[in-house]
Image 1: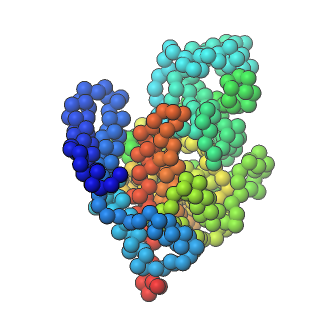
Image 2: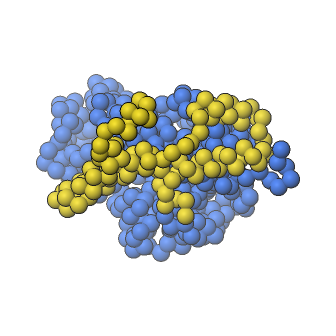
Image 3: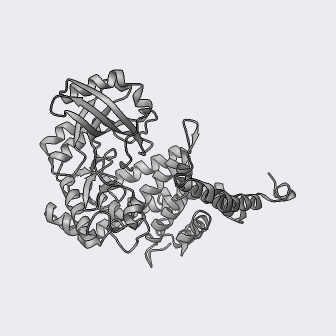
Length: 104
Length: 357
């Protein structure tokens, strides 16, 4: 789907996820029995991850990552500080989506 | 897994098998008869099913009501894990070596009884839940003592080697070639390839692990999942080591690194022994029983490897977010913890200064 098409409809996907998550936490969670609490919190976490992923911009090209993975495995970047820095930045960006607390 | 819930009147799916199960139990226990009085499915892995069963035995050495655990292969078997029959033999070998385990009682490989192989073991008291144990210091008794005890237990597991007489019973265990470290790297690469995942950051870690692979002096029985969450404690201390399905011949430091790795501290990062106590206490117990000094530098290698391994396993679990048509939110979210595990491995494997290029 093109960016233009994605931008056409409101509320946007990220807004839907945020509202859904807030409804879950504010309205549903207090009404749920104790044994369902963990599942509800997992659900809230899944919605939060999806929301952060949608909001993220930039990122690496998939084909380039695939090539790099093969090159690293075959020892073409051993000790390569530039590649290391790029991987570190890319992985930090992924963790910013999955678990921002792990970055602190 | 939590083996703490009480059996209920409902027998669940186990009840459908009582016509074949009860006579088998009676025979195994040397009883005149056996009645399944209760069966509760326990939360286990995706790999096996655990049932807390209450059985009324008539006569024989087990006469009366017994609360036991019945463990069977799950319908959706996972490769890379051992069968229940193999696990049963491992439990027996471990018990004979002095390891505290739920005592394995009877193994059934006759598919006519339950449709799948299973075994029965004694029920352990307590809890194994990692987050609960890390959070509640009242569990497991004195924590330094608990870690020391766990070190001793691990050393007893490692006292079993391919040269031990009991190894004849354990012929199913894999021997890593050319070395445990290199075999692990090859296995994790094969797994990510199977998943169709190309993650250059994970590859960086695996390449580092390949280049830095330490030699292994001698192979021992390694548990391969020895960590907080896989042992059971009550208010006084340890009641048993659980989850034997990943055992293999390996480097003893693999298990020590897995136990101490930051990713298995359940948020209690400063408590380097599994989030419960000091690393020194754990090492002390291990060294006292094994008579071997732990090479701490090499343990650090295996701690990085632990993050890589857990990352690959997490990716595998994430790929199984649909299990037999049922969604597993837990599996899905587990897949997404891989990046933080890879990040931890990356941080620990920066290129050395002056070697860049």
